[in-house]
Length: 482
Ligand code: ATP
Ligand code: MG
Image (spheres, rainbow, N blue to C red):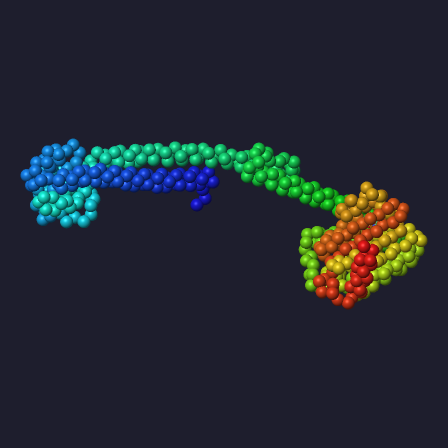
């Protein structure tokens, strides 16, 4: 059933209250009945003792009958019966003898001392009986107390409960409905505010009135809205930057083609134009590939299999080989101490991409006669590849933004060296997804140092690869220096 929370709360409230009142009423009724019985039994007992005393101390049958008639013949509240053990009545007080002649009281031989019976003329009664010794032998004596007055009191109480309980339940339903409406009003307000917040109006926030559950819900929603707004902002920025990056090569392609088509020209001119167009198209392909890689890395689409071990030494060595010719043509010395075997847990293609980007940066931003040095530092659970260059360096204010997408220090878009500014963002995403860390230190005019810290596979930590040998030496050196 699809009931509103308010209705459900009210129904629960009314149901539990009705049940409570019912249980409470039954308890009170039972308690009052027990108290009534206990009180009457106590009073009957007192009277029984008096009757028993009278029966016991009588001198003979005549004296007994005289005393009984005198003391118990016309009692205000109680009735008395004295019988022979065989059931023959010796003495019966007046109200019983007057009105209940037709109903012989056979109390003799009753085992239970007290019991409730219904007598024709006296109605509901409580009777207490016992055997008493007398000058004429053992006699069965009984005291009868009509319960009419006490039962009327009990009836009044039941009537009161029957009238008051439904009124209380009705008031409770009304009160419950009002209270739940009041308690749920802030939620209605929250719903209204949240549905007002759209992609274009992301600054509105929920009001936090009290530090209660609803206040905390509002704070949680506000925090979520903040994160959503930031994500939206980032997404917009990303789309804007990507569009901006795509625009330049597209414009170059378009204008080159338009100029070539304007007049008929010699074949060589067309060749040059087409070459320029291919160059720009390559640039576009690179950019779209980079964007694809970044989106996949950041979206967590690549799961790193930590059981897959790769030789980082081999990867770095191959990357250095790839760049050797370029570095030489720029008169930059490229030197590497990173040699196989160096086991790390991860994916070879993606780790190769990291070092391609980093060595590419070092080569791009190191002027002639500079040098690039690659080293490895081995720790018990990690490997750190350090790439140091003596390049142009980076000013401190740029360093915190270097890993942002499309961030370049030189925004003048130098088409010689300038990439899209995605390289470091991709590197960090890949290293992070390998459970590692990428850090960068730089000084303008001195150079840049990039550290790639990657976890070593558990098995390699005890093996005989070159990293383990080196770490041993390192730890020894550390211990000595301490
Ligand atoms: P892409 O890598 O996408 O082709 P990019 O190299 O410009 O383009 P990143 O690799 O992300 O982009 O680097 C961002 C910026 O950081 C670069 O534009 C450059 O200014 C600066 N930078 C990176 N590495 C170095 C370095 N070794 N020396 C000096 N500046 C660097
Ligand atoms: Mg780069």
